[in-house]
Amino acid sequence: MNLETFLHFIALVLALALLLPFFRVYKGPTLFDRMAGLSVIGSKTIVLLAIVGVVYGRLDMFVDIVIAYSLLNFVGTVAVARYLEARGGKH
Image (tube, one colour):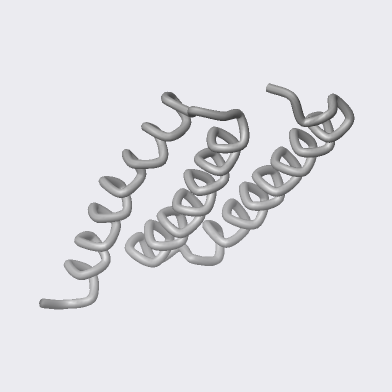
């Protein structure tokens, strides 16, 4: 098994593992569970993008995309957390 085949396999496993947090986002039961699910989806997507960059041999380009996406993921999580804190944490 060469590196490219291995990375394709890992990317497939990560893509399938993304389905579990989608269930948590859809079902809940609380708003904080949904936020945690979205954060996990964002983190796995970042790793998946980095793997795609290695497979295509354009890691330099995909690192920029990964950094931008991770910043958006972090800022979005902090913004929602601050909003919920200001609201009193009620869902």
